[in-house]
Image (cartoon, rainbow, N blue to C red; front, side, top):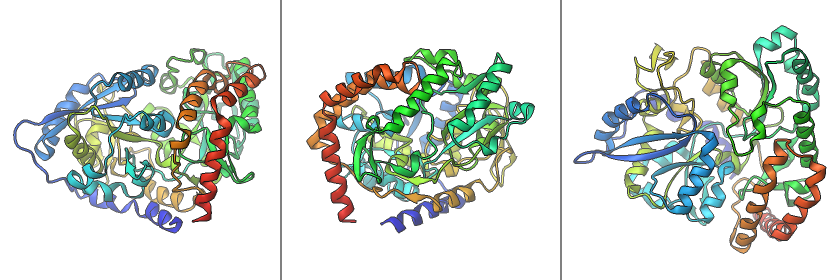
Length: 488
């Protein structure tokens, strides 16, 4: 199975050449096209109406439907989506991810199973998405369509080139948070208007060894199989998690983060800093060419270190960005056709990503798919990572023309997690998982953003986890993983 996974990750580029040839879905529908709501996190676009109208003209004759795209700011996204799920509000296509409550949403019956819809109405979707579709399988059913993108997980550091050059900072030699810390203090001491370390409100501080030993198993990012113990453990039962939280608290006290990070429920406004250039360092899951993408998107020059550790193919990286169809949708057939079109039709995919040619972007080299954005056009969502098949997307002049070949090599050299393909049976621990989710909501943001001293919350948090049933979850998942490993 594992050799097949790497082969598929390497060959996932094959459809890209076909896409540049202009292949389109052939399905048509009689009558007027119907709107399909697409909910996404991110900033609202001033000229969204123009893009939606162009998408109607293009997609309507092909699939009898068109996208009604709605972006919700990050500050409201989490609560808005969860409220809609709880109230059974009508939705069609909705963004979800492993880190964005996907597992809990499946348990709450928020999303439709997709197998029959794909087979009956969107058969080209399986080939276009390939192995990534095996990630969101629960109880034998697919519950979301992942974005086809990098197939492995590895954190990277990113830096503001202007400040790196100004102070002669040896950015390529920075690997660990300890390596970075003196330069954060340097910026703090000399650049009062600059945020030394930018937190985006989602990412945690990467640990240089994190992906070498952590193999998340698909019931939420906090439960992980550790090869050193041969057990599934909750991450807050690992000393390195507390060490990382302590460093975050130290950095918070030293004023390394942007001030609005104190508003746990609010928007951290990291994109505002990127555009203004008043930031120094940032970290996130990375992939080949990400620094170039960010440079083009924010008109600032970003430097990226490349992987801080061995890239690892895990189930949760396949779940890092997905689109699901709501149980409340009255247009599931049109919705699955929409997802098929997003994954198979290059022109449509790029319309949603970059807008209308001549209005929002222009071609630099149409044959090679190289474009440049038109300034202040009113449409620049910068959400390629969320809008399905990335291998269909155009490139900016600042990006490496060999970007997709680099993706292939990145995927090929990745280590396979020993639990890749494992799907937990959540039935025996469903109640405990729900209880743990409620507990971690009380503590995780405070600790991961450094807002509270970990020492003051440690015992309280661990006691609450124990009362919620964390030991039962660890024992049951360890049993399931060992059975999986024995049979693979």
